[in-house]
Amino acid sequence: MKFDIKLLEFYSNIFDIIFLLITLLFYLLFLFKLNFTKLKFNFIFFLSIFKFLLNFFLFHKFNFYISFLYNFIWFIIFKGYNNLKPLHMISHTNTNTTTTTHLTHKLH
Image (cartoon, rainbow, N blue to C red; front, side):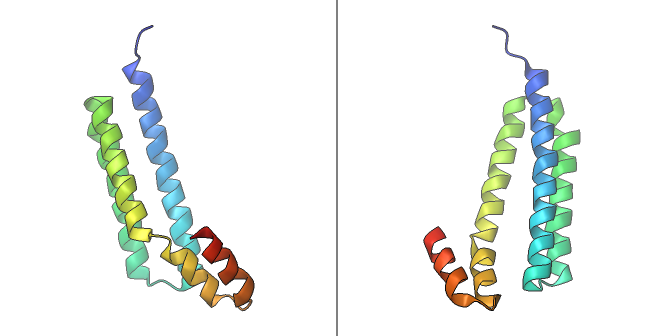
């Protein structure tokens, strides 16, 4: 069975597009739910776009594994940046604090 690098690179680019859309969706949600500053939102969003463009135009010329490793590292950074704090903060801004706080502590 032959290993198709082009197909894997294609899926890597699809992953980038999905990741960019998820990033936009989450930060739009957090912007409106938590009243984030526009500066913080713009910084994260444009950093995400820069990452996507860098990966699309640079890493697709190299081995798929380099791109995959870069995606994995970026995902770890993204998860470390959020660290479930926005979810916890949403529970405290809601009027029905008992239900949402109980749900949040179950998620932790």
